[in-house]
Length: 312
Image 1 (cartoon, rainbow, N blue to C red):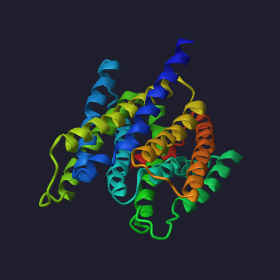
Image 2 (cartoon, one colour):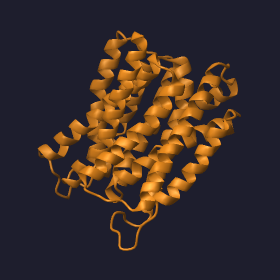
Image 3 (tube, rainbow, N blue to C red):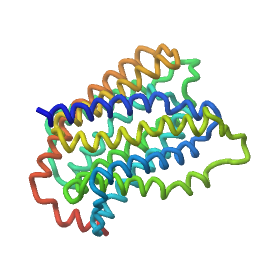
Image 4 (cartoon, one colour):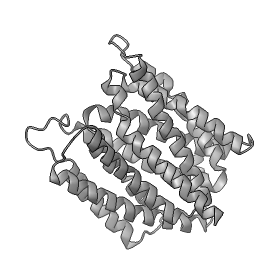
């Protein structure tokens, strides 16, 4: 019974933290703090969360070749998605970006089907079909609307969608071979490693807000992401993936959308509302299908050819 309460607590914290993070992430940029520096702050907030994880694991770290490859690959994919997300939110609001990002299981499932020859249930294919329809609805721009800058935002949104889906695929292998705390450590290392790229992309010739509503506000918001991700790691440790995956995949975007609409006092077009509802439904279907596929994958021996391909 204690174990049940434990995973539920981690899921609740994860949903609240990640939902609030998604709704608030735009604020520092609107206050004059560049998106690239927002990435730097996010990467640095991963450090205290990593220290907490290592303390819990008594400073034990998986450091064999395979663990380093899987951990860093997952980390770089996640970091690239974060970096692009900051730019995406400059030209599109969170309440349409995050429902699309909740569809990352589409990519994970398709990669598993293509490269691991896994099969997915009817719910998985149904979720993918609904996902395509939801993206069409969410990309609708009413005439005279200024909420987005053309359709470039769709391209920017698809990039983190794809790399985060690929990250989920890689983490299947990582979770079979290493501790969750080690995965989190290498993800943090990879995030920090890309800080020079973010600094190079920053235009320091323009005015930058270094006040409390700039980097300090960004730090307060990004720490929600770091510890929200850490809570998800422990939710999967204590609970069942088949339950946790659909809940976390769908509920965080729901909270993000609700808070965004309240904060920015926006009344979305009915087609946007319909697209959001379909995206959440799709995320639930695919999250359930993806977790079932992962459980089947974990019950079998991982393909040596696939391992060698990843490590090369």
